[in-house]
Length: 423
Image (cartoon, rainbow, N blue to C red; front, side, top):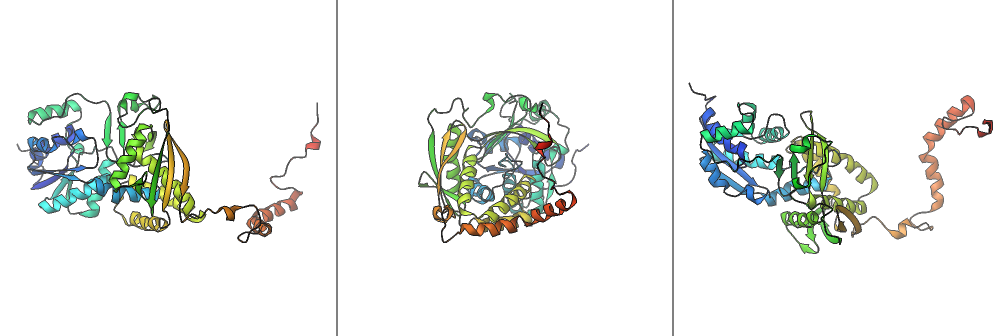
């Protein structure tokens, strides 16, 4: 009796070459009777993840394989807009995995349309965030495509099950030794979950980290890096002009050497449960720190404070997979307008996990020493402060006067210390 679920001619699978997606190829063919086209995005992940990818996919049963180098697009059209917004999820997470999924799914949809495929598939589990991020992008870009999430359908429940299935269909498996950690890496970061991290009370082992030095092994001498920005975008490192992806790669090298960008957090997943993860984001951490300092020079108080509120919502949208939404695009318009004056440079000193700000300069700086002086200048007459304070505190004064009509004291009145007896 056939196991075929429904008639699908072609499906485009988001393919990484790991055990799960390798097994998904024959599973789709067996259960849907369809041709499987694999799509893999080069987003700057570890080099070994791309080795032999085409051959592996074809050996697993794929009819065709697309491998696209998207590092430049990832940096220019996703990471830098997010950087300009200042978005950070739950105070610490720089959204490295979250922001990558819409780009992968976008290209997956494009391949499906070019190939005349009726469906797309992904290897995200049914209890994580990524399934939402992939599928919201599919809906936004082509809602007519059918979506297949094997982890929500199949009987495979363990690595052993997957290996057995791979042997049954002669699927080449990268290795049979399981890494105790689940990782995701790209140009922006590397994430670690599982293993010892399943208990947030346990300290992560040093051998888990892949990108960055331990602070204890970092150089004993600090290193200074200068980052130039134009309209909120980083354009040069140490006075060398670079393309977006190259900026991030250069700063990754510097930051990793000095143990920058390690984050250990318990986060609230979109689906409701909490998860514990460790992230390494060396270059991204340097960029966020430098960008924040340059904004402190170039943005007025009201704009900067309101932009901080926008950043929280922007971060939620990215984390929830809502990149291709009217709200995210509208917030981007606001953000980018605020970035017009954010041009200049920032110098950072890197030392054993610390980012130390040692200078910043902009031709659009709103900081003026002559404006901030305590002396009476044309721009500010200190005698005007009295009227300002009277108006600024008027509501407090009215409230206090009302309270004094009751018993002659305000709510915050000091106690009468004369009534206290001394021993």
